[in-house]
Length: 491
Image 1: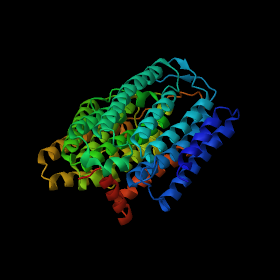
Image 2: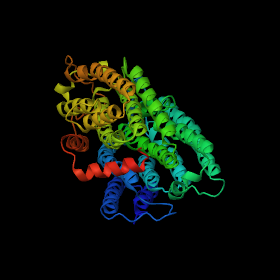
Image 3: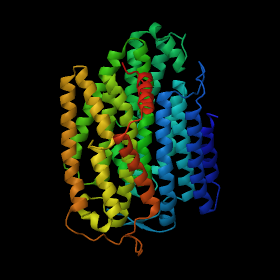
Image 4: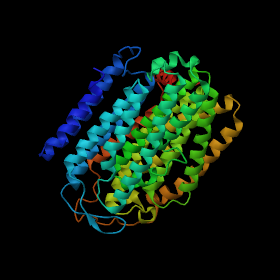
C-alpha cells in the first residue's frame, strides 16, 4: 500500500507523455493528485509498522513532509488544469522584454509534474540514505523541464543553472553517503534504522565529515545560503505553480535529507556538532535573505528570497532542538501552505498586469479584490503576523531559543525577521493600496481581468489552512509534530 504513493503518480505521469487528448491529460493530473491524497490519508490513518532494514517506511517526519507535499500538489493540480486551459496553444508575450514565445508541449509538462510528485514521495518514504539520494537526484531531473516551461532565454538559463548547481550539491551529498559508510568500517549499511542502532560505534571523525557533506549537498538543493544561488532565478522564471512546488515541497525534501543525517549524529552523541552547524547556516541564510529582500523590485524574486529566509528558520529551529525543533516542524507545514498561496497570487498578478516589477502593480484591491486580499493575507502570514500559523511557529522557535539561553541567537533571529517584515511591507502595500493603475490587457482577451475559480479556490484553501493552524492547534497534531521533531534529531 505504501508504494502506491509513488506508483499512482508515476504510472499516470508516464502515460501522460503518450496521451493526445488535452482533456484526458488534465483529468489524469487531477486523478493522480486525488489518488495520491487518498493513499497518503490511508497510510496516515492506518500506518504500517516500519520494518527494521526496510528500504521504505513512513515515520512521523516522513509523513509530515509527505502530507504537505500531497496537499500542496492537490492545490497546484486544480490551478494547473485551469492554467493550461487558458495558456495552451497560444503565443505568449514576455512580461519583461516583450518578445513572443511558445510554452513546452502540455503532455511533457503534465508528465513531468506527476513524475515530480512521484519522486518527492519516494524521498519522504525512503528509509535507506542511498535510496533517498537517488530520489533527490530524480527530483532534479524531472523538475528541470518544468522550470524551462516557457522556453525563452531566461527560463532556459535558470534551468541550466538549477541543473548545474544542484548536480554539484547532490555530488557532495553522495560523498557524504560514502563517508557515512566508511564511518561504519564496512559493518553498517546505509539503512536509517541500522545507522541509528549502531551509531555509537561509528567513527566520530568520519561521521562529522559525512554530515558536513550532507549539509552542504542537500543544503544546496534546500536553498541554504551561501549555496542558494540557483533558487532566485528558478523561482522567478518558472510558472507560478512550479514555483509553488519548488518552494513548498522540493525544499522540504532536501531538508529531510539533512534531518536524516542529523538524527544519526544525535544518536552518536554528536548532536551538538550538527546542531551548531544548523544554527550557523540558519542565521546566515536569514541574514543574506534580509539583505537581498531590502530594495527588491521583482515580487517573484522577493518570494524566492523569502524561501531562503524560511529555510534558514527551519535549520535554526532544528539546530536549537527541543521546543524550537517542534516549532520548526510546524513552520515547515505553514511555510509551504503560505508560499503556495503567495506564488499562485503572483501568477495571477503577472498575468493580469503583465509585469513582474512591483512598481507596475498598483491598487490591486480595485482591479483584483480577491487576489489582492489573498496577497495581503499571504504577506502578513509569511512575515509571521497573527493570527496565522507562522506566528505560532516563529514564536515557538523564539521561546525555545530563550529557554535554552541562546540570547544572541534570539536577537539575530528577531533582527532578521524585523528587517524582512519592513522590506516586504514596502513592496506589498503599494501593490495592494497604491494609486490606481489599470492592468494592461496582456492577453488580448476580454476575460483577462477575471479571477477564475481554478485560481481562487486553491489559493483561498491554502490560506484557510494557515489561519486554522494559527487559531487552533489540536493536541494530536502537536504530539505528532513533537514526534517528528524528535525523530529529526531534536535534542
